[in-house]
Image 1: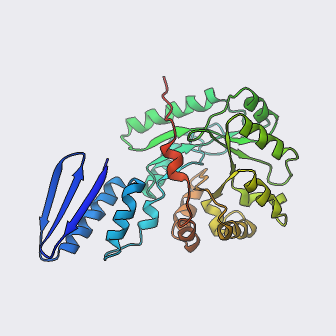
Image 2 (image 1 turned 60 degrees about the vertical axis):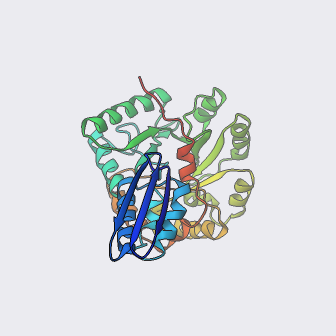
Image 3 (image 1 turned 180 degrees about the vertical axis):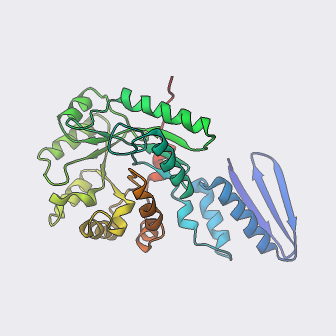
Length: 311
């Protein structure tokens, strides 16, 4: 991985020093800026996810000329909410579906994902053992097919008695250092949501509320968003909501959260192949570009994540 990039150029030459490897690459040409652009595009294509400390330098170089349209896309290469594991929720049905979705993510520029199957009492009673077992299967298939993609798993926990039992037993799959992805009913208000959030935080967990823009019971009651935000809950918005894929209201709420700076994470929440085109279109939208200007935590979440080692 590129640790540090230094560059200087004069009228006749361009010098690149990749510290850590000790190699010096020198290029001389009539148009040194064109050579520099070629090198930078090469780095973006092969590394895609440049560490944050190098990104500002590369962007500053690109401002001097060349195509800057992909700057924002290159900064979102980790997805933290998806349904890629086969046969355990309403996401990928087979392992072949899993591979199709992962290949689609790669084509969009993603290099890594923490996939999050549903965990809920009435429908998908997924335990860490079930989830990690399926994770092992998909990882093995990625190796067999030579697909370069880092995949780990956690869960999207529906806030119910099953979740409360697992919370009490500290039997939760975390994202990053201590984050847990939760969701509620779309229609019915969760009466004890603030008590559950308090219990999560008391146990050392950072709550992330999945797609807050999709909860119909919160529409017209914007104080709920403020109260949750004030309690320290992180908000994760779905890419599809930026286009109104789920409903016009979800798009409006996304825009309001953007205006207020209340978006911590942007994620695909991809379930099936019908979502692929939606994700591709959303990543080209104006609102996506606006959200990417926020201090999103996707990259820092991945950097703090402990990759699960499976036997």
